[in-house]
Amino acid sequence: MREVADGVFEVGIGFVNVHLVVTDDGVVLVDTGLPGRSAKIGQALHELRRGIGEVRTVLLTHHHTDHTGGLAEVRRRSGARVVAHQADVPIVTGAERPVIRHPVVRLTSLLMGTPEPAPVDDVVTADGYSPLPGFTALHTPGHTAGHLSYLLDRAGGVLFAGDAAAGRRGGRVGSTPKMVSVDFDQQARSVARLAGLDFEHAVFGHGRAVSGRAVERFREFAAR
Image (cartoon, rainbow, N blue to C red; front, side, top):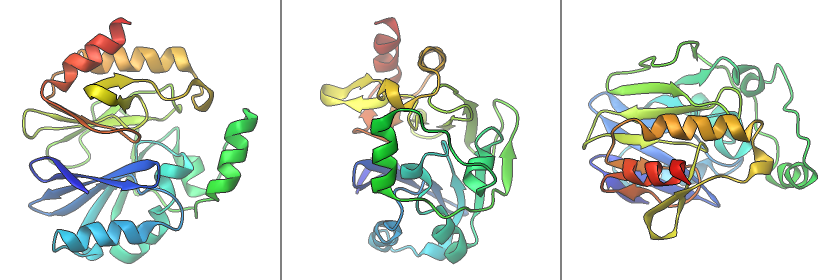
């Protein structure tokens, strides 16, 4: 675990990151990692002298297993409110099964396991919605139809990019693999939109965070 910005912590769970944000009203959790790994979240909270019961809100970036794997257990143990975009809600709740076309992704999904379905309490239907004070939900489709990024008004701006983009070596920004996105061209347009915002820090579902005018790295990536 490392602190990316004031009260914003990156927690690695296998090959995916989840993020903890300490607020005046408890802890906000952005994504929940792989199935069967929620103990890692509890460990990180313990290091912060916090408990799972202090998680008030879970902000989901999208429905993929490596981001929702611990959701049901976290919600059950904390009573946290779950936020997700309406386009991804049916898969999060188990009302629909995800369509997986690429054979490599299908195999990876089998190895990761199936996340337990969980209710969604706050369904995002409008771009720019504020799910809680200081946070803005940005609809950034492409990786999934309902992919959300979140912008936190703190420390010059902290972008939770989810899998709209990925952190690369040397503080660069790159893309997630094309085979795991439903519309790669749309994803590129979402990245270009993020590059038009203003933020100092960016954190990702995969790869290390970028700090210090992180938006400039997004602009470089969008221009390539």
